Length: 221
Ligand code: MN
Image (cartoon, rainbow, N blue to C red):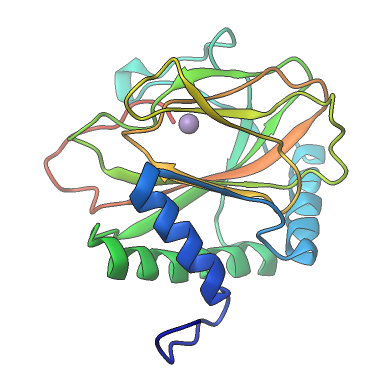
């Protein structure tokens, strides 16, 4: 079905096409078993090691002077990706290729990718929010890769996505199962993490425009 001879090092052409089509049509995409199971296992193992070494930090909301811990809004602990492991470098290479394809298709001028591991302990959640302010965002496209093997139906911790034009209308509820990948326009799609019953792991990431543009700051992710 491919109309070009393009070959991507990491992505299946059809996966990329459906992702980009969905991003254009409705502002979000969610796909199950999107990413290689072996890579997800390695990333999950790395997050487990980071937690054992107490290298996760409680996530704050707000930026600069406004940064604050609010367990009633956001309950995860994070570790920024730093290219320490081969698994991280493989994941970042995948995202670099996705960035290039989104730029070709959507002219978004994405410039860089930043991401962190996230661990939600049992009972944690993240209230409904946007990842950036409309029209003045450096973070343009948000991504989430889930890392949890064998997530049960009653595990909780789903991500709910809401309609771009009606923030009360839920349009998708995504189980945080290993390999599931979600991406959406950061300033358009309200989303939340429902309370989890089990420890819940993921990598949250953002494609950004050049951070120096406009001198504006982003809100909590
Ligand atoms: Mn978010």
